[in-house]
Every structure is written in C-alpha cells, then in structure tokens.
Image (tube, rainbow, N blue to C red; front, top):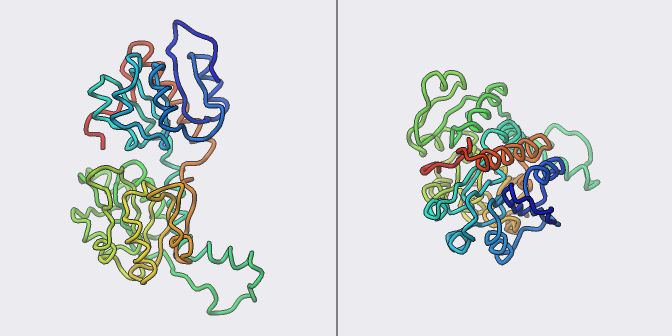
Length: 332
C-alpha cells in the first residue's frame, strides 16, 4: 500500500507487516510503501523497492546482499533494519555505496532473556514431552519414576556472548541457583562481572567442559558460523543441554542432531534454525529437543519498541543527523 506523495519527506519501503500503530505512525511521518501481506519479499520485489526508495525497512527474512545493494537506486541512503541483528545485510557493500545501516538495540533484551530461561527450564524438566503426553490421552497418572527430569539449581550455566542479552540471562539464572560462566570476545569489566556473578572463560572449550547448560547469545558472522560443531559438542557433558536463541547458523545442525540422537548431549532448546522456516525432519522427531518458532522476542511491547526505534532512526536521518543506532564498521 502506497501513501500519497510527500515531496518533503523520504520515501520509505517496508518489507513486512509491522504493528498497526507503527504502520500508522510511519504513514503520518513519511511517504511510506507498506507491505499488503506478511509474506517475505522475493528478490525481484526487493530489487524493485530498493530502486525507488530513499529508506528501506527490512527484517531478518530479507537477505540484502552485495548484488542487491549494487543495483539499488541512487536515492537509497538508509537501511533502517527492523531488529537488532544485521547479519542478513552486507554491511561492507552498504558502506561502499554510502548507505547508512541502522538497527534497534536494547528493545528485545528482557523478552529474549525470558525465553532463554523458559527453554533452559523446559529442556531438563521435559516440559514439552509432558505436555504432549497429557494431550495424547495416554497418561496413566503420577508415579515415582514418571517423567523424571534434571534439577537446574546448583548447576552451571555457560553463556556464549555476554552482551545485553547474555547479562540479562545471567541475572535471571542466578535467581534459579545457577553458577555463571561466560565466554566473550572481550572480558567484561570487574564491576559487571560482579554484578551478574559471572566467571570469564577465555577458552570456549573450558566453558563447554564445565557447563551443564550452554546458552548461545552472540551474532552470526564468519567467526561464529558453526562455532558449535561436532568437535565442540563432544566437549560438552553427556547430561548437558544446549540453548540457542541467537542464530541457527551458529550451530552445525546436522552435528547437533547426531549428538542428540547418540546421547553425546542430553538435550537442546532451539528458537532458531539453520534453514528456517524449514526444520530438519530428524530434529522434529527428537523427544529431547524443545523447538519453538523464532519467537524469543515476540511480544507486543518488543515489536512496538522496535518500530519506535526504526522511526526515530529514519527521522534523525531525514533531519540531517547521524542516527543514534547506526551500525558502525566492526559491529559484528
């Protein structure tokens, strides 16, 4: 849906349906081309939008690669991403064309951390299995050996990626009696480590060997692609559980399935997948995997806050200022 021309305002192309209040505000402020349906744009549609707009508002489902950026119109000067992660955008190509890229940091932290804790509880306590058992109509009642899971208090949580979300998970996990270890590109200041009660592991192998639960919370890039592969899974405890709410590409999914099938690790809680929305049928068949549909940040509050940041970034750029949330070189 295209709104009437506003010559004094930038033309903004939005690739997916956004919360109604965000779409309404965008159409008030900008000449906005909204998506009529909620299907991802194909490559031809993306190229067409990028040829005509001043500002593109993509989401994680849109792969903005170097070829698309090279074919963009001269007017395109801002890619205002709806979301925090920008691994679906070729930042180097955007910089070469003088296109600013912004994201929306901070608005998803609490909701994503909450879901990480939900998965951390669901996997060892077999919540999804129990729910399926009740719905199947085959449950025969309580018994001392029925649906035995694993206690989480007194165990160790290893956090890979100790940014905003990692720290929020650590604070929540302490309330459940977990000890916290973390692995990060850079060690946190002492004051932050004390605040979240975390111990730094400079070597990922050490964290994997000592952790009962491992939570992945880092961006996807060349360095982190398949950072959890067969060799890394073999370094984990046999009764350990892997939680991934970050990006599916962080994990070698085939190796993870093999590890879950063979008992190399005890379980996994996944919100993201290597080829989503497609999910490997072997993964779907596993009882020791809790699978949810990329919904860690899916709250009304988070989506509206994300939209507010997108609008603020566009307005600051349109007013001739550097957007607060510009993604700078080396972000990933």
